[in-house]
Length: 140
Image: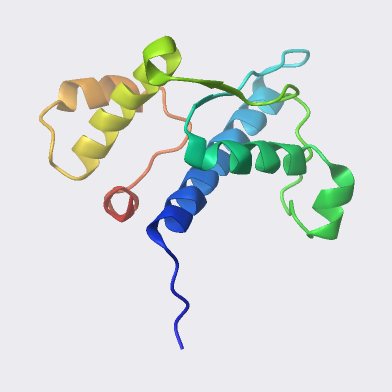
């Protein structure tokens, strides 16, 4: 018997997975490229995911919870460079969120061949820490 999830639960789960992936990449980058710097995380302020994101970041900073859940096989947790809570902002209030959306649009558009903007993707690709493939873009 298959388990049925409602669309809201699926959206929250996808958001948390994306948030986790991004946070781990940021933490890894900060560990490899900085010594005393810290990172601040700004997430889009959406009622549907706000509490789940806060709970995720609290988990990633708690050694006891990480051990209890048997998480972090790659030793990136608990976070050392992402120290503060997640800050939430509306897209209209944050240029960083607007820029992230624009980058996502061109990267996904390039990978799915739905956006003509290869020159923009070429500029972005040089700065990517992780290079997605077209099957990842189609799944989102």
